[in-house]
Image (cartoon, rainbow, N blue to C red; front, side):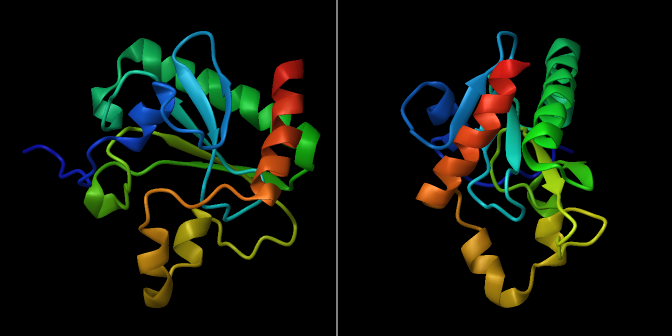
Length: 162
């Protein structure tokens, strides 16, 4: 039985990759991955790693795509350490609507965890979720603010060095 995916047409990540959205794109990896600032900044600097090919879940990735995403995660983690000096970094992803996947295009969250983080040891969005926030967080894309642009510029500077 296939995993139920969130309903979204067109896919906002495919739109971003095709250049039809200006939505926090940081950098494109030469291989297979797009690095995008997360619209929902649960922690400052949180990014998404997205395969260029539309692959809904982890089981839909090729081995090459999976390897490229984790290589990008390592590169981004190093840039986050340089840019934000976090106490730790959380990697997480959701597969299927029932697991919390909001966009039907596989993506990996990379989250710097500062000392003042009020998240749990798990994904920060789950620690802060209550019923009043669910509607707002379910939005596919939130506006890119000047603060998010500044965060993206700071992180981009460290990504370009790598």
